Length: 173
Image (cartoon, rainbow, N blue to C red; front, side, top):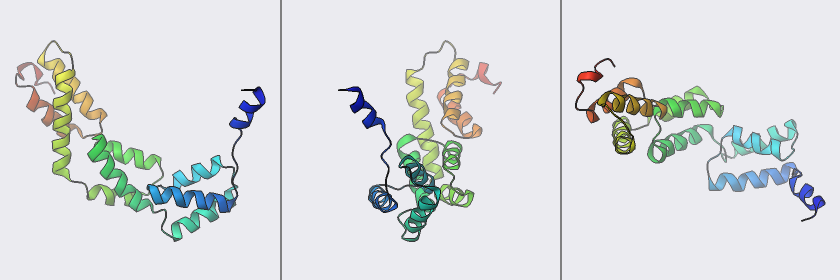
């Protein structure tokens, strides 16, 4: 490849508002997108802020983009496939500029019993692979792992305690 060919590939591909609208309609038809996802894509395509807002308004009006629907799909996916907890999901949605009401509504539909079972499964899997010298160390590592997944402390503590039977040295938690 010649140096001029490399620079051509790195140039931003600019789109007109009509092209951006068509591209986003195709993308939104395949997978849920949030308003912030659409804004990020249009910024990358070199659309002006005014044109981007016009395209976004049309996508929202025609229900290609709906942040509440996006939040519900995101919660379902992260609970079932990624095994995330409520705190991690809430934080990820807030970073995508989803309204608090939409996040709360989506999380309210979550299966709380299923979240607890999923946490127990993940901690059991982690317990099989983690290296430890004492039950205290195992419990500490399981708690840290559960918290990193975004579950609340009490749920993680209960689930970790069920895997560590010898809790004489672990009662400090």
